Image (cartoon, rainbow, N blue to C red; front, side):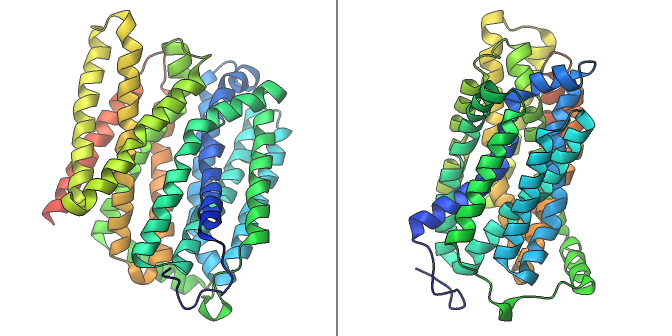
Length: 404
């Protein structure tokens, strides 16, 4: 193993380490996707006059996580990985418990925002753990293993969420979050040793932090990567926000939504596999730009069919489903490459770069996705138009980056 010489002597067996990290990262995916089956019930109970507002339960979580990721990395660099992870889980679990007793949409949105802030801990600190213990190709290998396990969660999350809804109504989903979060917290705290010794910690001072942020944002290519990630993530999250309504109301598959969503997640995982096979030969920029070009073409065709009403009834759902699979496949072909491009230029401040890129791209995606979700009016036109616009702009920016 390429275990770094500053890492602690006690470390987990590789299979357990990979499984634990995948479970920690899955906290984020589970916290989003498991909510999808609960949205109709929440809308009917808390916001019956404007059911689209229930989608804000997803965007408020993402907004909180975007804010939290800006601070999670520097805090873990200052106090250590275990205290930072513990703080994140305590915030996450406290907010999930508060959501159990929320009786208005506003209180539920506040609880979800705080829950997102807490989820930034597992997301960012988990990445730092791999960086502490492994380097080079071994680090890439571990990350690949984690992502392979992690891809299972989006496929299973709506079905698991549906089980908790059957047992306890929409409040039952938050019982699931408590169980999920407590399991990850206890697993990490009891099994994983601290990976950042005191000698390597960096004081949490405002001036060095601001200098790091300024250095990241002064690099034009890193800023362009952030914008493209936000555009890609924004169109994907806009589709995710409207998924329950599109599958259930527009295309009449409410009862089988968790199964269709699982199929979509499994099929779209091919993007990660294709990227892993081609990236060394083709290059990160070319793969990402080609993926956005393909998304532009598919969205033009899909939007044309929607607006012209040319599709016969039996073909409407299959065409929508294939287009939606394409949107999520695009993520597997772009996000890893774009993050790697941004990080490759800032290796000396990798933690700060990861926090800034993640925070700004997530917040940007929320700003794009929220109004698209609220514009839902019974058809897929708003999300298809937004996907076309975001992909076209991302394609153009990637062209600029290639020329530079």
